[in-house]
Length: 177
Image (cartoon, rainbow, N blue to C red; front, side, top):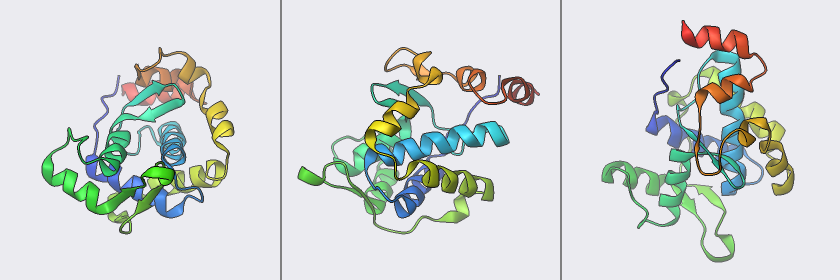
């Protein structure tokens, strides 16, 4: 099966792009918008937008590296990331503390040179479809068969994304070419 490669800079730009465009700018909405955009992009174009891996967490699938970037922006002590890139994350994103603990603010505009037109189209579609949903609605939407097929806190395999896609046979054939 096709090998996925993670692009950390593109992942940061995706978080910034979603933060700029999402009506609800909290950690949960940003990560769920990314999930649904990635899932759609895989089905339509045969690849994830950033190549991130997804974990089946309690509140649904979460892009592991993107979540680590957001945690780093919230708490600089949470650093398993190269120091230069960690500085870029912290100068690009702000995650609120206290009562605003889950709010995310872009400190700069996303550099869309890192995004393809298909990336932008899928991100925009996901913002439109998911950006105004309540926590509960997003939670229910993301707890589908794909999430249920994986034990909590384990990685959701690419094969599972393919199996539960809208076009599994076509996608499997494309990825195996």
